[in-house]
Amino acid sequence: MAKFIPPLVCLMIGIVYLILSLHLPISRIGDPQSPKYFPVLISILLISSSIIYFFQMYRDKAVSFEAFKQLWTPLVIKRIGLTCLFILIYTLIFERAGFLISTILFLAAVMFLINGLKHWLKNLAVAIVFSGVAWYTFSHLLDVSLP
Image: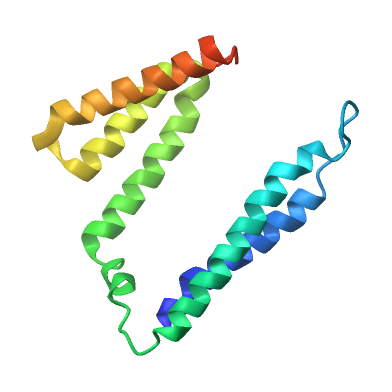
């Protein structure tokens, strides 16, 4: 029975997101419905994927669902809690430190949490390169102002 929880949760999120997307205000310039297109598409894809996932789980109902049991190990709960804490810290320092520094710190913290200290060079390289490429893409190529 526990294996039906993830597709049902995703289905509920998709339905709520669809309802909220349909209530977005209309645009005053261009196509009045254009702000709704992308969110509605995302919600329809989420709902469709959830339904497909649900029927796959129903078809394979005899197979045990071990992944849900693995979620409740102390290590996983600790990692989820620390990731939520890192997200909170990231949101608090984002405006003050700016996109580049706060994103490097956040990604490095999550990478160290997942990979450990043994892979410190890879963790730092991924955090710095990804943040730098994202900053350059938005700031210079797309001309989007970042904090």
